[in-house]
Image (cartoon, rainbow, N blue to C red; front, top):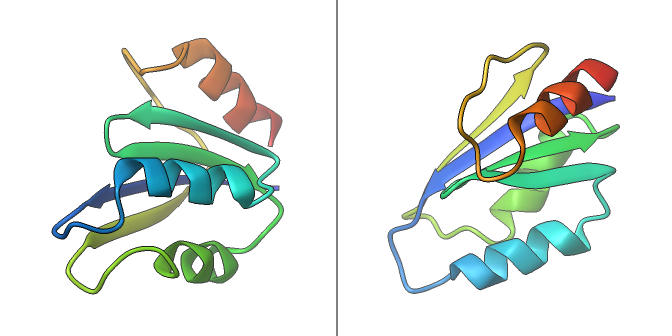
Length: 92
C-alpha cells in the first residue's frame, strides 16, 4: 500500500473543485480525504505512475499538480481529523 499527497493550483474554468472531488470519489482508492483546500491524502495499492495518470485525465495543461509519495508525515490543523490521516499513513 502507498500513501500520496496530491495538491494542485487550478488555472482554468475546468476542472471545477466539484469535478475533482467526484473524480477522486470514483477512483476506487482504498482511502482518501481532503486534507487542505487544494490537497488530498490518498491511500492505494497503485504506484505513483498509475495515480499520476489517473489525475492527469482531469487536470488541464495550465494546472499545477504535485503528487508526492509519503512514508511519514507531520500534519497540523487539517480539514479532517489529523489523527485519522496520521493513522492511515502509519497503517499503510
